[in-house]
Image 1 (tube, rainbow, N blue to C red):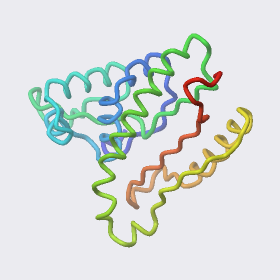
Image 2 (cartoon, rainbow, N blue to C red):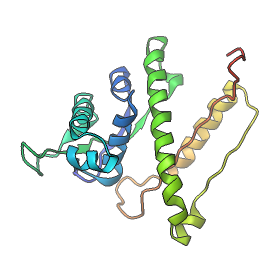
Image 3 (tube, rainbow, N blue to C red):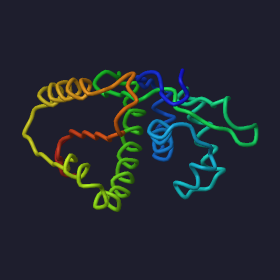
Length: 191
């Protein structure tokens, strides 16, 4: 595996869902995917967390098979870590009832990590160069769908996104695509 380019997607199993049920682990994993190998100290400084906490989260990600130590860099004291996969895939529709609780824990962590990413974007988006600002999209749609229609929409959108993925082409700038589809239920609605 090239240290700069994670090899493939990973379909998250129950063990990986448990490891990723923490927003900081998701954030650190995504950082390694977008920016390449880094040390716990570098990540701690970037995200303004304790380096011991960053190191702990990285060890948890490694134990879950989501990152590896980059043995071509650093020393025993200054360990470098790299992502093993280019993205994580989790489709709650494909998991069984025994996976549901872990799936919901992962969802909670994903939403917290995304909200932090969007908070950071709120400060940087106004500073984007015109070309990138004009190419960006910040849209919100409300549709009236059945669960089956939402499943169909999810599949169609995933197919479109997959057409734009580049497996072996390092050109271009990393672009975050976040897609959320969920019912707008009120706390007193029957779910």
